Amino acid sequence: MGLFVVYSCIEDKKENIAVELPVEERLELAKKYDNAGGFSEGLARVELNGKCGFIDKTGKQVIPCVYDYAWNFSEGLARVKLNGKEGFIDKTGKQVIPCVYDDAWNFSEGLARVKLNGKCGFIDKTGKQVIPCVYDYAWDYSEGLALVALNGKRGFIDKTGKQVIPCVYDLAWDYSEGLACVELNGKLGFIDKTGKQVVPCVYDDVRYFSAFDIIVAIVGESEENQVRYYYDRDGNSL
Image (cartoon, rainbow, N blue to C red; front, side):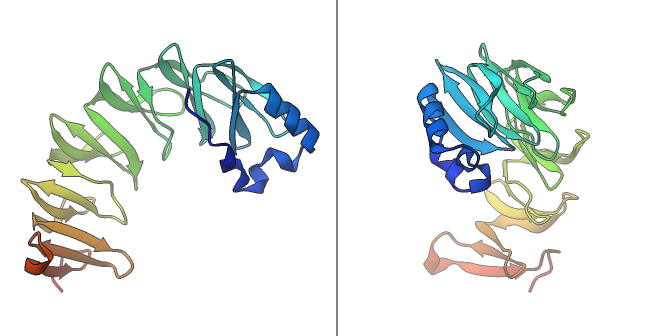
């Protein structure tokens, strides 16, 4: 069983059980449990006899230690593992999304990635599979779009599952400030959310300098031979 990062709860004293309990009671809790983590959304993971549950800030065990593993609460739900499968519980301990998935990730922008039979998709907080598990891999939503991989290529889907950027790129990275870096045939560029290559995939390296709102595109792999080109976010040469 992985170690919980005990010291993380100290970073925010509002999330620290020490705020509400005297040292004697905290000591008793420390003796009771095998391990404990920091608070997240008002609850903290605890481990007892190889099983995980949650306590509130009074030290009360509000969710019994019955799970093989548990992760912090995020957007009101916590991911849990039971008998090798993963699902989600709410703060009452109700298993709102049954432990049926081979793998799962925390909710992000209202949706959570899940893996079933080697394929990835997305569920909402009711457990509905809003995007079927058809992708070889998927990443969390960022700025309304999720990076997905299919048949060795990468593209982006929206929250309806529409492939707004087709899976044609060899590599791609999450959107940041409306732009995503993509690689095609060993060359890098940037696309916007419509899929337009605002900086064509002809460069050895591309970088977005967000502090200056400038894109730097580089030809040449060694510093001695590098040539730099500069663009604005609309792809206009500067």
